[in-house]
Amino acid sequence: MTSDLENTWSRFTLMEQLGNIASEVGRAAKWHKKDEKLFLHSVEQALALIDLTQRDPRWAGGKLRELAIAKEAFADAVLDGKEYGSTLPDMERYFMQFALAARTGIS
Image 1 (tube, one colour):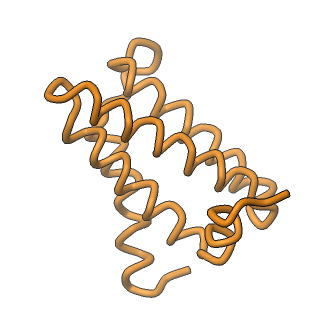
Image 2: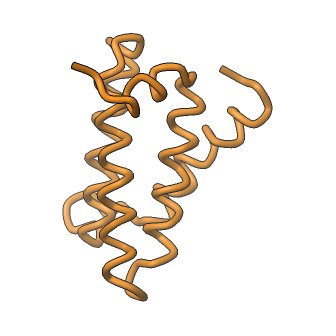
């Protein structure tokens, strides 16, 4: 059974999905080391949206691998880059390019 969110999410292009993830990653970066509750909520939301995107059958193959790498890098950034040296500002820049592409109509 699919949720309303999944149904809505599946109508978005990949750029729109990643752009929405960018918003949550940006919020996480904003609240990091300032407000733990808001930070953790943004992290949870970003990961949930990444999971929804990964379940979208349209992104099988290379796009799915890229999403898995991005998720791992984001998780690393949340943990202060202990494994790969990822940072939240880096992840925000990575995802923001997709938000900008979605706004300009690139799919």
